[in-house]
Length: 187
View 1 (tube, helix red, strand yellow):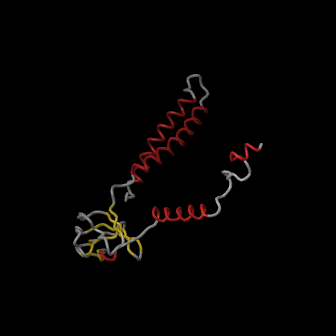
View 2: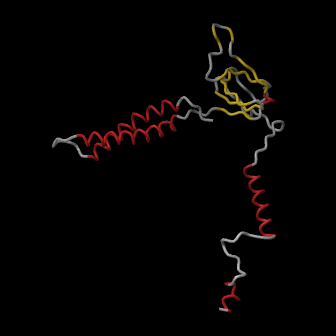
View 3: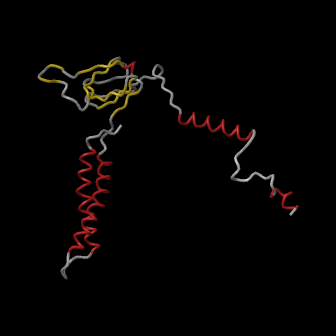
């Protein structure tokens, strides 16, 4: 018994479930806070970086992050790195040009923008995957129910009803999900 305590197997040994105490605990705690601040800290420096780094064509859907909030719009004029104003029309709103007179045309100063995002396609794939998964589950359930209701000798098996119903549901609801997902821009 004495040999085991001297070898580090006694009561003075640090057990895995005991919390760290003393200098080691404060050193690890401050290091963790510093690492978290470096990894997850957000520092906005609008005066040091231009929000537009490359030319953006007119008609592009953009999202401005301003101190007053987020503005989503469609550019009505090309935007270059040297510009001071951005001309846009509110996205998902009435048309900008109603009978030859500009109704919803707006401008924003680029020096008041914290961040600028450009739409990179739509979320049709994401919507199709979600719709297909839901459709496969619902279609498989209906296919199982329909196969279970059949009482004749020429009825297909339970498995074929689940598979056929699942495939039909996945294709049908997946296409609806893709159509719905195409309405949402991907940033």
